[in-house]
Image (cartoon, rainbow, N blue to C red; front, side, top):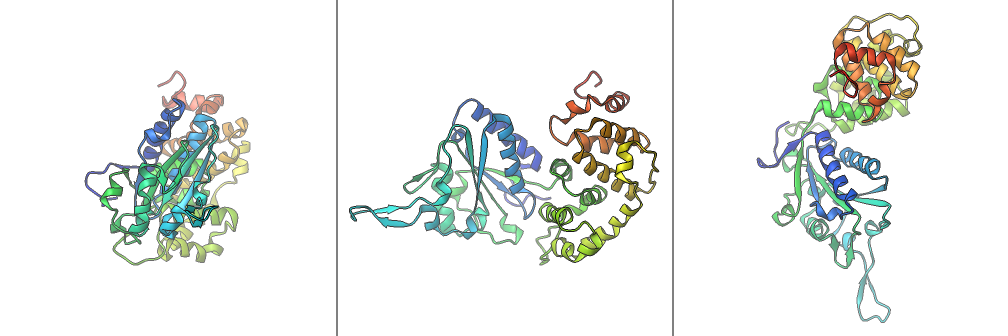
Length: 372
C-alpha cells in the first residue's frame, strides 16, 4: 500500500507499530516517568486499516506489562466543536468571572494504579478550528483552564487527505507537535491479531487463502462497501454473534464488504460442509484429510478457531497436533504458527504438550527449548 501522507514518514505495519509503542510506553511507565516523556503520537492510514484496534492492543499490552488498569477515552473529533473541548462558560460564584466547566473527556482517574489513554480519533477529519483546539492537548496537555492528568497518554489518528474521506490538511503548527507514523496494510500482521482476538474461522480461513482480499480500499472509485480489516472484523462479529450461515447472512455481508467480495466469500465457504467435525479431530478419532487447497485452508482455520476455545486443554491440543502430522508440511506449519500466536506466552504451554515438542524437534523450530 503506497505511502501518500509524506515521503519522509516511517511506514510500518500494525503489529510493528503496536510493539514499538507498547515497549516505549512500558519503559517510561516502569521507570515511574510521566507519559509526557514521549511526544503525542499521530497514526495515519486509509479507512479501516486498523488504527483503532492498534490503540486497544497497546492498552492491553500496557495493562499486562504494568499490572495497572488502562482506561481508553475515545474522542471522535469530527463530532466536536472547539467549545466542546474547552467546556461551557458559566458565571463564577460572585458573578464577576466566567468559569469553564470541565468537559467529560478530562474526567480521568488520576490514581497511580491507572493509566489513561486519550485517543483523538479522526483528527484529520475535524475542521481546522477543532484541530487548533487540539494544539494544547497534544503538546501542553491542556485546553484553556483544564489539564490532563500526568498518567495520560495522548494518541491521535486520522485518514490521509488522498483517501477521499472527510479530511482537512493538518496545520503545520499541529503537525510539528506530533510523532507521525503511517500504517500500512499487512496480512501477516492482521493474521496474528485475528488469531488472538477470536476472528471467525471462516473469515480467517478465506483470508488465509486469499490474503489479497483483506484490503480492498481504492480511493479512485466511489464504492461505499469494500473490504478492510475493519469491515472483515464486522463480518466476523456478524457470523459469531448473529448467524454463522453465510448463505443466509449474505446480504448483510455484501453490505459490509461489497457484492463482488461477498459472492466470492460465500462460494468459498461452501468447502466447510466437507470438513471433518472438529470434535472428532480434537478427541483423537480417526478422520479423513481433505485434499483441495481451499479445503486445506478452511481446515486449518477451523482447527485454529476450535483450538483457541480449548487452548488450555492439553489432551485436545495434543490430539489436534497428532492429526496435523498428516497434513502437508506447509499447512501443518501454518496451523502451529497460528497456535503460537494465541498470545505471547502460549508457546510455554505448548512446550508441555508432548506432540508439540515432538513436532518442534522434528522441524527444528523450537524457540524456547533446546532445538533452534
